[in-house]
Image 1 (spheres, rainbow, N blue to C red):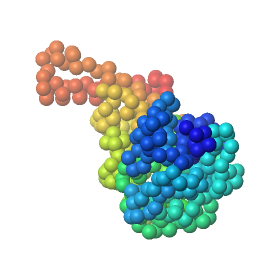
Image 2: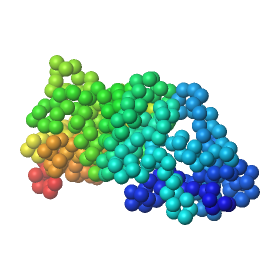
Image 3: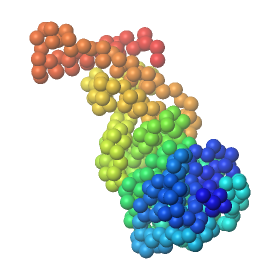
Image 4: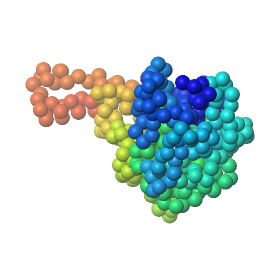
Length: 421
């Protein structure tokens, strides 16, 4: 292959200039044809346009192409690829200037749209007015803001204006649920996912895509327990804490969802939010259906939303057990804790993040975490074998086992002061 016609493009070039390790490398071939690529052993994988895998490295090589808007949504584009498409024309179709740089195989930077200057200035700027033709780019830019949060990139004013116009146009509704969730999931994997949602909020997209979250803005909470202010600020702080505690996107998503029920509390009831846990469950379920989330993702977010209040109440202000054995069993059963412990551990992580996601409470102790782990062990130690040996079967066995478990919880509570938490 002619070395002068092949260029490293996109994120690999950006990350090299930022001093980040280059994970995936993508290449653009200028002046090539599908026939020439296959003749050199490249493996075709693209459907909408020619993309090939290198026969040895398996890195992606795409023929230079242009795109033209033809309809609504992410798929409403006509793609043109031809040997006469230039590198500059290929780069022009990209979203941000910092992603529209290329590098020759000799290491020379090709930067026709000022990407390096914007990289140095920490600015996210669209490459051309064609940015507005693809509504998915609103989410992509928000995701890049989260991905690059450590560098504190800001939106260029003209880019923010375009994103606001897209949000107001109704085109975000044309995005497929899968594409929206794909961007959200990628954002949740970054070091600071809150930036993703803050950017969406800043450009008017949060209320369009996630009205359940936007409804938390300005919702008052008890100042004694929530000095940080409204429920949306609290939610973002909880997400920050969850990210510090866990890389699992299930935990992070549940942290984001846990208080959505507060958005339904009538203002006359503020700052209290009695019953917000169960009020939030239908919202979390509906959101999961709307974006076709994995069932386990939604199920865990529902668990955290519906049960975080009871988990907090496991110990009272004096650090003593405060729930009845029946209620303790309800929480453990909901978390499937007698069959496996991971879900309960993840639930406790969300609740710990909730406790610390408050201004001035960032380092607060959370003894409930160890309490629930130990009470779970007390219940798990109850074996059905002695009951089976006594002849218990069926419903009678189930009832007797429940009573034994309740008794184990009572005993654990009675000796709780002797337990080290």
